[in-house]
Amino acid sequence: MALSPLTRMVNLAELQEYLDEMPANNPAGTVGEPGIAFANDQTSGLFRSADGSMGIAQGGKSVLNISPAGAIDISVVAAGLTTLIALSQRFAFLPLAQDLGAVGDGVTDASIALMNRAVTAAFLPPGTYLVNQSCTISMQLVFSPGAMLKIADGCTVTLSNVVDSGREQPIFAFGAARTGIVQIPNSFVSLGWFSIARDGSQDVGPVVNSLIASAPAQGRTIYVPDASRYLIATTIDIQGKPYITIRGEGRGERSNVDSSGVWVGGGSQFVLGPNVGIGITDSRPSGTFSRTSGLVLQDFSMSGYSGSAVVQTGISIQRDGDGLILDKLNLINFNGTGSGSCCVNIYAQDTAAIRDCWMAESTNCLAIGNCIETSVEGCQLGAQPTGVTINCSNGVRVLVSGCNIFPDGQVAVLWTNMQFSQISDCIISTRFTGAIVLYGCVACEISSFILRAPNDLSTSWTAGKSQWAATNYDPINRDELTGLIYLDGSSNDNVIRDGQVWSYMDATNATGLRIKSGASGNRVVNLKFAGSAAFVGSAEVVAIESGGAAGVTYLLDSCLSTQATVAGSVVTRYLAAS
Image 1 (cartoon, rainbow, N blue to C red):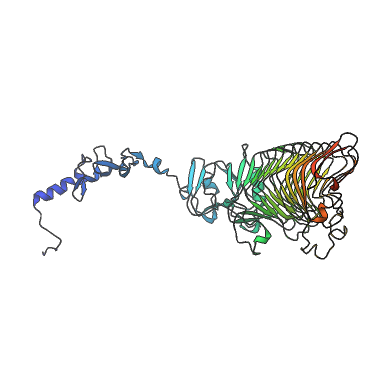
Image 2 (image 1 turned 120 degrees about the horizontal axis):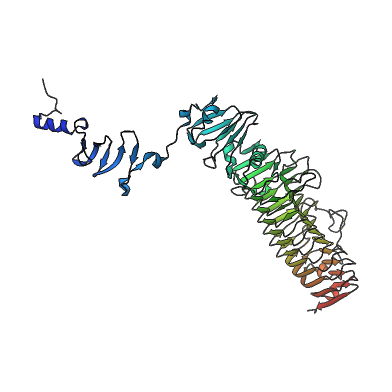
């Protein structure tokens, strides 16, 4: 027989040596005496020990060991580690859903398989696992990318253990009617889990309301993914649940003037449907008293529906509450039929904080009623000519600071029956007189402000109209004598100080500050009035109709004697003419 070129003759001694080293003939082999050697390294290779275990050695160290019972231990020699650790611990192996009988084809019911109480956790490979009955799943489900749990219409599925999944990964699917409900114990949930269209075509309200209703006692954070635009066709209701947070990944598009007309993504966004009155609410229950604590709405935008036939409000919190935070929100386009549309309307809140928000292109921007120790800080706001930018009433210790208030609201700041409250460090621009109005306010302060008043007649709703023909130009029929800052006769013991009032009104006797008859105890200190020649030449730059009977009004270091018209109990210290 001819020999192959790869064949060589061996003697009997060599053959016996190979046979002796085979594992079957060497049951007492050690790590240093491998049954099959690799290359010329006699301390690396496959081995079988006297106890029946098998493994792989590397450099005289066991890196893989399989016990007679089948347990697999492994060490990481490359990292300098030689301790053998059970493979089940190192990789946390879980049974697959298919091991339990779940098919994952989107058609076969996986309910029974996933209700297996003998299993504490299961891994779901890619596939759609239909749950066709209401049930409780006690095992923890770990979703691989592409794995989804489909809840049939009309079914409620309760997961006893927290969900393990990435925040952008869709893991829940629903039937055609989307009437299925899934309840999970997570304190953090992502809207990205729920297979809701992010282009504004599918109502997110029912899912969010279900997540709020099933929130654990310690509260819940609902995450709004980036580059999403969710439709609110059903009002989101906080339902009195404490410590709910709805948080996005940025506000995205700021204004209609920034847009090309087609939404192209960016930020976390909500848009109201045409017939929805409120985007997010915490409504006051009829006939009962309850409070909501710790509601946080943060880092997303919300838009009303352009041309809506109903009054629309973005956020309306009417239930008594404490610790409300509105942070980095963008609210625009709340201009439904009528004059009541508003970006934000809050009532009966203690220690609320509204900060770094943009509210604009809406009938009204911000309404605050019956609130205590509430602050509005660092916001940019501008209402429409039929509305009010900041409207506060019946509040105590309310602070508005560091805000930029721009046109076109008919009133920039309207305060009614406020006490011990302050407007400070704000820049206010307006096209109308009556920019800052106080009705029945006591012990309030307006300080460190710049007020820049009517000077623009170029827009479509003012073009060709007389600036001071009240019925022709001003949305609520005020004239130049109203006063850019106006205190009614029941506003007492207030302070207006350290501000600049710039006006370009061209009417004779245009008024910068008017305090009506009956008001008393007010102080006007260190104001600067400047602008057009007609304005600074007016004899009523400051008009104090009466100092009132209850207390003297002070007008100090704010205007020339020729710029003031005063009556009643008024103490004056005029500026010297230059």
